[in-house]
Length: 190
Length: 283
Image 1 (cartoon, rainbow over the protein chains, first blue to last red):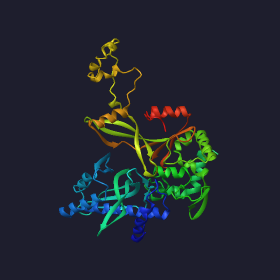
Image 2: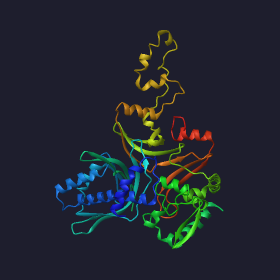
Image 3: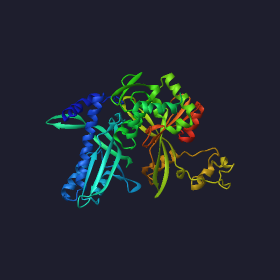
Image 4: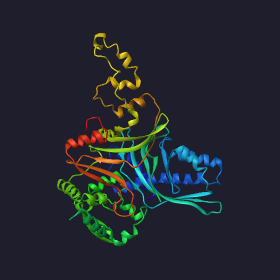
């Protein structure tokens, strides 16, 4: 699905956002999933930069700010797991992003499987719409010589929220829906 | 036909032996499509609005699933067994069959916005510096077009309810009435023994205790959920279902019926009170 269709969906959503649960058509679900996935992809690009030892501290700082803006707020929790341990860690998003800078890899790649699943949007009493996106990720950490030090495949559930954003152009205000990420939960790691 | 037999036949009918052999990895993309990925998906499959491959169903009576390039026709009776954990289907075959018969006969469906279902989340909190286990019971509360939210309706948190052994010396003596209960003064300052001044039938409620802890800013902090939540579905007359998450590389996986009980309405009341720790009136 191209960006134009996603944008069109964004424009259509205000009219749709009145029911308690959105029963979207298949193409609408796909468009919404596309919007959510754009955010998830942006996050994985930011994660790659934060882990990259060749990037400057300034670029990492700016990337961290960008990554935080993808989330509803900085109170969101990230659950992390590893093949090396049964322990599951829980960190606030800011702490998690900061920790990525200290991972012992020269570079990392974060790839997504071509399988995603977005649950139905449900309206919260705060007027926002909530859903969960299920994604499947391959994480690879490379050593100084480019050798693979660590690789895992993880199924994750990510909270997403659709909120209205007000944009001011001249003396006019426009409202448009915006997709933000929430807490991230690990379902399984292989 | 027995549910187990149906399941075995259906597996080969729907997915074929080759497909089954390929999907031996729980993170295999093909297998992920078959998983009941979330509770919404469980409800849609129960209501025959989503097929076993995760695709939406337009017609309520039957649907077609594509297997090895061929369309195969399925109906609700054929796919309901896929929503049961296989161990349950094996151990309670007759009961599962009776349940499915009733659901099919009554054309019973489930909605996320039904009132009589609960979800429990086993969690770890920190209380005054010590880690404690808590079982939260939650329920969806709807506000018409305004939307909905989960509310905490029950709690099992023994550490919030310290035990207080019987002590005959702690009392409002039987002549207190003549002095306008001036001894209430001592009772309210009797900290850990305060339970002795309450009726013997009094049962402290952990949710109220948590409410007071939070209100008073005492040191309670949510740390994390210990495992996946469990769903307790009581909205079908005569039945209670428990839905849990199963990760496995073969057979049905994801959110499945883990237990099924035939219950009366009075037993449901007890279940809500004693298992889910809900003190408020059942909706």
